Amino acid sequence: MIPKYQLLYIFLFFNFPVLAQEKPQVIVLTDIGGDTDDEQSLSRFLHYADHFDIKGLCATSRMGHGQDIKPELIHAQIQAYREVYPNLILHSEGFPSPDFLETLVKEGQGNHKELGEGWDTEASEHIIKVVDGTQSIVHIPVWGGLRELAQALWKVKQNRSEEELKSFSKKIQVHAIGDQDRHRDYILNEFKDVTFIANGFAWYGFTGVRELSAFRGMYMTGDVSKQNAEWVKSNIHISPLGEKYQLHGHGTDGMKEGDTPSFLGLIANGLNVPEKPEYGGWGGRYRLLRNSLYIDVPDFLKGTLNERHTVARWRPAFQNDFMARVKWGIVPYEDANHNPIIILNGSADKEPLYLKKSNGEILELDASSSHDPDGDDLHFDWYVYEEIHKPKTLILFEAEEGGKVRFKVPDIHNGESIHIILEVTDNGTPALTSYKRIVISSEK
Image (cartoon, rainbow, N blue to C red; front, side, top):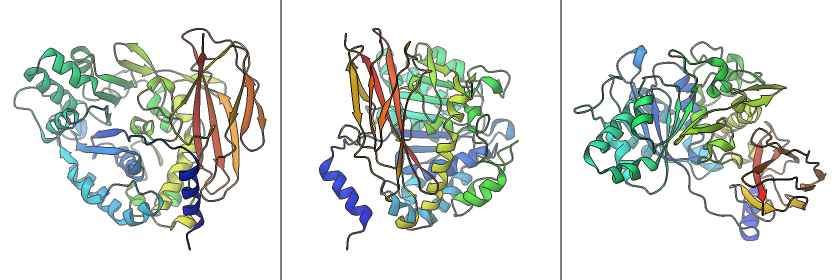
């Protein structure tokens, strides 16, 4: 007899168009073994490994913690992942094999300062190989120093034409947490075609300005009820991979994960748009400053405007999501919770729905075919992401029970877009949220 959840997916497959979407290609640079929160971030990253086309897990210099690298800590987490892998694939077939992940661990240079001739490493060479081997964007979350990327770019510049360097650079999108080894300016000045998200751009000394750094929103401001050490013990330390999550994040009681926003925005949840940092999502929101450089911008949270809020506003949802995924590693499908499946206007596509509409037009959106894989009840919430663009007239959503809504399109000038976010949350334990982004511009 076919289980109910499999029948549901069969029904969805044959009745609604679902576009195949490429997973973002990801090379992680981590100074793991320095601050303990890198081990926290890696544990979460591996719990979401089905969302990424992982191309590299690079151990980089621990900088002030020691001019060395600790790849053995990455290997230890992959071994823990190996223990939960047979159970994880019951919930999502997209999880990569632990044997494959082992081949992706690459070693960088312990000396975080030196660049140039004679300073190539396994990690810097691997970056070049991966970028050369694709025509798509390679996302590089940087949890520590930028040296390995800087070395790769230096070598390409030495050996290729200006046009070839430009083509190579355009395929790279960096999300760097701060400027921890002082190689950021070199990359920004010499390789202007690299898309660079400078999280914590208002940098002061080594740690950055806490009040102006989006990555601090991972553990600061907003709802902090699900992140202390007791919460970690009860909800994360329940599986072998969860137990690799450190109880203290270098100066915090429980979760810190200051590096995690660098990949949270790559998760395909219907809200995140990886190559549109200005759209905002779980990993924060950023504005284009110059060339291809994006920097932190503020969002409102409880009436206060701050850069940290662009991450913190989503914390209740992404913490619940993490709790559920850790549980995936130890329980069968029917005993766990899974995210709602949003079907908007007949499509389950997780990309934004782009619409061109006339000012004053009545627009109807229909998400009533949305389902929950576990049969849970669903709650629908529609709102405008006002920090991106706030219309001059208030949008009044006339929502019907079951996922339908209608409203009048406000005045939109050329070059402006209104972002409407649909959140669909189930009543499972923990409650899980999926999203759909609708981007409306004027058809004039």
